[in-house]
Image 1 (cartoon, rainbow, N blue to C red):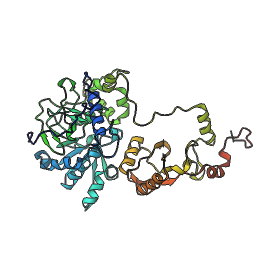
Image 2 (cartoon, helix red, strand yellow):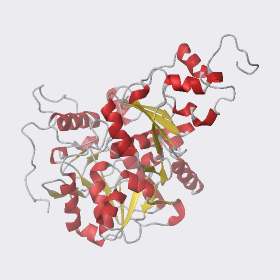
Image 3 (cartoon, one colour):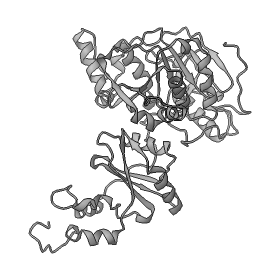
Amino acid sequence: MSDAGELVESDTGPGEDENGPPATEVTKWSIRQQIWDHIEKNDLANFPRPVHHRIPNFKNAAAAAEKITALKPFQQARFVKVNPDKPQENVRFLIMEAGKTLLVPTPRLRNGLFNRITPPPGANKQSLRTCATRQGVDKHSIPVGLDDMVKIDLVVCGSVAVSRKGYRIGKGEGFGDMEWAMLVTMGAVTPDTVIVTTVHDCQVIDIPDELVESHDITVDWILTPTEVIQTNCQRPKPLGIIWSKVGAEMLQQIPILRKLREKERTAGKDVQIKAEGEPGEAAKERGMRRQPRGKPRERRTSEKRGTEVAAKPNNQGKQSGGEARRKPPRETDPSLTLWVGKLPGSLRVSSFKDHLRESDVNPHHVIWKGNRGFAFLQFKEADAVDEAVKKLQDLEIMGKKVTVERAKGREDMEARRPMKKADSKPKEKNAD
C-alpha cells in the first residue's frame, strides 16, 4: 500500500516560502520550525492555534484516522495505545467503536504511565465520541500500573514530521520516545509492535538518516488525508530506556520512571543518568532552552509581593466564607475575569489549559492557583466572558464538576473582608 499515491502538497512546501531557501544546517529543530511555520502560513490546522510546540491538529485529521480501520494490524489488535492529542481524537473513537481496549498516556506522564478508557455501559456513538475527547479520557479512565501485565498490540502516535523511511520527529520534549521506552521496559510492547502515525500530507518529508538517534521511535504506517504509506522501516525500534539520555529533571517529573529505574537497578543494569546540566536535544540545536508557550512569567516585585501579603490574613491561606479566593488580582478587570474553582489537587496547569482548549475557551491569560484549587481566566472582551461561562458550566475534570463564576468586584471584596486590608496603623492585635 506504499504506492497508494503521490504526495500531495501545496505550491510551497515547508521551508520553501518567499523568504528564501531553508537554513543550510538541517536539524530536528529546524525541521519542526519549518513544518509549524508552513502549517500556520497555509492555514492547514484547526484549533488549537498556533501549532508551534504542539502536535498539529491538522485539517482533515478525521479522514486520515478513518484509514486505520483498513489496516490488518488494527483489525487484529485488541489493546491499542493512542496519544491524547486532538488530531488523534477520531482514532480513539474508532478504537472504542470497534470494541477494542483503548489505552491513553497520562499528560506528560506525571500521574502514572497510561489509563484504560472505560466507556459507560451501552454507550452509543455520541457517548464514545465524548469519551475520545480529553475531557472524556479524564472522566472515563482507570489507571494502569506497572504490575498489570498489559500487552499492547498497536501504538498510534502523533508527529510533527515523518519520512517515508519511517523516521519520526515529535515536538521535542521527548515524552513520546520515553513512553515507548518505558513500555518496552515493562514488557507491554516488543520491537515488533506496530506503530502508526496520522499526519497532514505536508508533514511527510525527507529526514536525514544522521538525525535519527538510538532513542527515537520509528513508524511502520503513515496515514494522511490522501495516503496510506507502509514504511517498511529497516531501523530497529528502541529496546528500552537509555538511562544515559535521561536527565535529572525528567526523572523528577515522572514518578513511574523512578520506579522503573529502581527495578532495573535491582536487576543489575546500568542506570546512570545524564550528567546534571548537560543540555537536551532541543537546547543543543538552538543553543538555549525553549521558552514555554505564552507570555513569560512576570517577575514579582516587592510592591506586588506586599500587595499579596496585604490581601492575606495571618494564617496565610484561610479565607473567610470562600470569598477571598474569588477575588482577581488587583491589576485585572473583574468584569473580564472568570473564577474557576473546585479544581482537583493533582491537576497541572498544562492539563487545565488542554481542557479549556477542548471546550473552545481561549482566555487572554490564565492565573493559576492550582495548589489552592482554583484559577482565574482573563479575557479581552465581555462577549468572550459570556461565551466561556456557557461553555464551562458542565466541565468535568477527573470526574469532578468544576465551579465557574464571574470574579467578584474589588469594592465588593473589600466590603466583605474589612480586616484583611493592609493597615499601616493596625488596630487589632493580630492585624500585622
